[in-house]
Amino acid sequence: MKVVVGAAIVDGAGRVLAAQRADPPELAGGWEFPGGKVDPGEDDLTALVRECREELGVLIEAGEPVGGDWPLGTGRVLRVWLAAIVEGEPEAKEHSELRWLAPHELEDVTWLPADLPIARAVRERLTGIET
Image 1: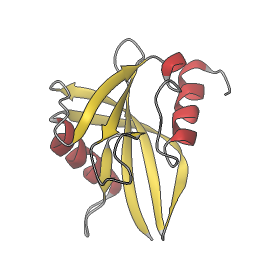
Image 2: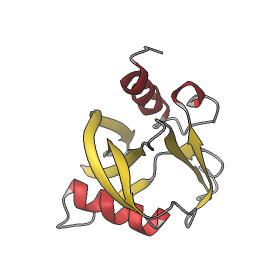
Image 3: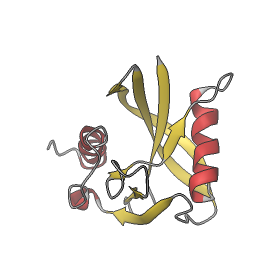
Image 4: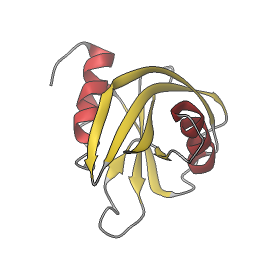
């Protein structure tokens, strides 16, 4: 099983960072949580920190996981953590756009199918309101 990691980065105002895919063409325009593949010999949290540095130019600190293994199909799972930026300002280095969303705005963007249930779980975690 291949593991993909993602960060639900929350700022001091309780907003969540969403990232719009630039590629591949079949995913372009969809919104996701920043992150990426875990490299061989790398643990999940090390990969998460590395991916956020590469994709956003920020240093993050991971907190609680959001759910467990979210299936992606083709033998892959997505693992997501709540996170906070400890250094830097996020830049869209590999995405078309970044957007900070308040919990009530989380369904205002078109999430990739794998990320939509996670966005709902993040909203519930931040507000205590089930979607």
